[in-house]
Length: 344
Image (tube, rainbow, N blue to C red; front, side):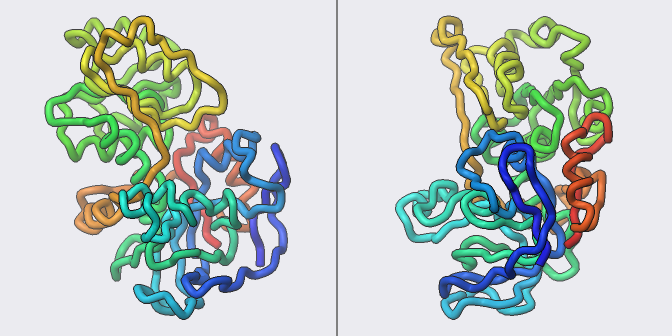
C-alpha cells in the first residue's frame, strides 16, 4: 500500500510499504477514506518530536471503513464507518479510569508517533473499542475528520482547561486551525468578547466569520496596549495556540488577576515565565495533550448542526498529492490554507 513515511528531520516520502496486519485481538484494520495534516506533523518534519523514528508512517487523524477486526473487538464490525481518535486508550489502566486517555499506559498519542499512522491507505488501530467512534448514517464524513484531534484539542486544552465561562472576555493568540477550533468551541460557553490575535489578515477575517468579536493584527498593533485599553485589566482567559515564546509572552501580558493562561501550542523550545510579575496575580497556567473525552459530545453537536467543522477545510488533495499538501499546509499564510483533506 501507499503511505507517507518519515525519513528523518526534513525528509518525508510517499512510498510502498507492507499492508498492516491484526497483531492483537483488540486491533482492527481500517481502510482510510479521508485524513489530514496536523501542525504536530509539521513539528515532526522539523525535528521537534524525537520519539518519531525514521520509517514511521505519519498521521493521527482520519475517517475510514473497518476492513478486519480482532476476535476481542465488541463494539464494531466489518464495514462500519468510523472516526479514528488521535488518542489510543485501553480503557482499563489507571490513567484511563481517570479519563486521562492521553496518558494511557498502553496507548496515548502513538499513531504517527510510536506506531504507523493514518496518512496511508490502511492503518492498524489498537484497542479499537476505546479508540474509534461510529459515524452516524448520513453524516458529513469529511467534516468529522476534524473530530479526530483538532476540535477536541481546542475544546479540552484551550476552552475547558482555560475555564471559559459565560460573560468572560477571552483572547486566542494564533488564528491557525487549533486557534480556530478553540474559537468555535468557546462559543458553547457564551463569552462576552473573543479577541483573535494573529499576523495574518486573511485568518483574522476568517475568525470574524467564525465568531470572533474583535481581531488584532500583532504585526501592526501593540496587543497589550489595545487589550488593556479596552478591558478593565486584561482578559479572563488567554489561550496560546501557536507554540512559540513570543505568543506565550503575549498571553502573560494580557491576562488579568485571577485569570487563566491555557497553552495549546506545541513548544519546541523553552519560554520565559515572568513569574516575578505573575506570582501576585493569582493566575492559573494549564497545558496538556488532548484526552478526547469530549469527542462523543462534539460528535452530537456536529450531528445536530450546532457545530460546523467543515468551515475549517480549505484545500483537498489525493493521497498521491500528499507531498504537495504538506507544501501548501506548511505555507499556510501564502496559500490561505487552514485544514487540508487528503483522500486515500
